[in-house]
Image 1 (cartoon, rainbow, N blue to C red):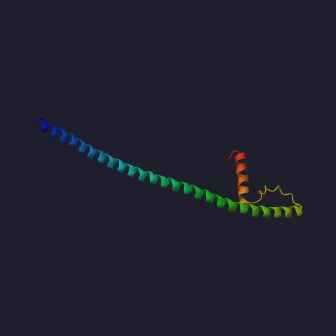
Image 2 (tube, one colour):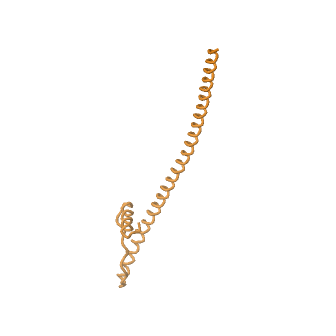
Length: 124
């Protein structure tokens, strides 16, 4: 009779272990599923943030291109104004002082010079 009881308790133990194994498999499956979902969400957020960086850089690029065009305009207008001022002086006029000429090329030197001026005035 004792042997039969022993078999039952071993079977019961095996059932419990099997149930635990099934539960663990389920926990593992859930964990994998959640890990996958979080990874997907994080990936999407990462891509969105990257697009945000690209937008910022594009805006900087457009501003610099615009800035470069304004610099060209300034130099052309400054040259015209210098010539006009000379004519005025020749005709006996007393024109006011010329606005500052921009420092020489390349364009990055001009931009750096202007940035420094704005910093000095506390505007940047």
